[in-house]
Image 1 (tube, helix red, strand yellow):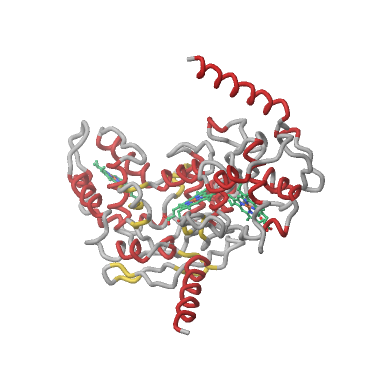
Image 2: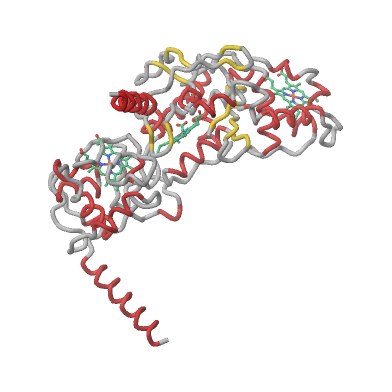
Length: 276
Length: 151
């Protein structure tokens, strides 16, 4: 009898873990995060959106619940140093003009956004200041300096709901991103939607498929022990289906970033999140 | 030296026989999703097929299907149905159709077509113009699937 009960318990657990997101609640250093909310109206095939945190193992989840345990904070600290570091021909640091990084609270929730007809991302705003206002070299899109800075700036919005605009000027970029999301590519001939919309909650070999949300980027991954940009992640997923990735920082990935961000409208910014 | 040469000659001979009887991906004949004729003109090898099935760089069928016959692999995906007892549900010709190009039977499926070499967009350079599996590997996988019967 005892054996039978154990068996049933085990099999229920396995099914529960493999068929859906879990029901854990995320609070970081005591501040509650929204990891589940009704899908934005534009999403036709999904009723509820979930943070990728809800699909990770309890061990990985716990690393994000306390900044002291979160390995990404080594890089956030580096971002703080960079913010104060003088660089470039003008002899200025970020801090020379931006008194306190906290002034960027809320910015992460709105990005990418359209400015003067162009879709701009956090990386471009940072590099814009570097090249135009500091006379410094631009940072590499997914390089360590850039992800440290985007993590630091993103952190100022942690807990605030993602709220990107998809109408008006943004509409054509958003449409482009949506098209890319549903386009099959690669020798394996799959679209982002095949995994992250049709099959989230399901195991794909050793991985528990999430909705592919980007509310936690840049993300610390246990796999490579560093911060990863969203474009870096898109690239990885494309390579896994044996597709030639688009260019990091290119128009296609920027449009995809806007579309993915909009599929997370309402989820809390979790930057810097921890994933496997 | 002599032995090594002999070995190379035999390999070359096998390769040419294989190629001669092999159906090119673009020439595979589908009849309502089913492929009747062997892609190599001969029976596949189930032992080798079992390896192709599990190998992440080849079939990687375990990415999406559970299979109780391969308990030594700890991770079995659940995107598709279990393949336990699959030989009771499908004939060899049907299985050949499914593995060659599952889209011919399951419209819009996520399951990749394992024996096509065109018709996909933006392949990574080294995969361009290639099929995921060779004709022999497809036949080996089918031979293996045919062993998956419920007692």
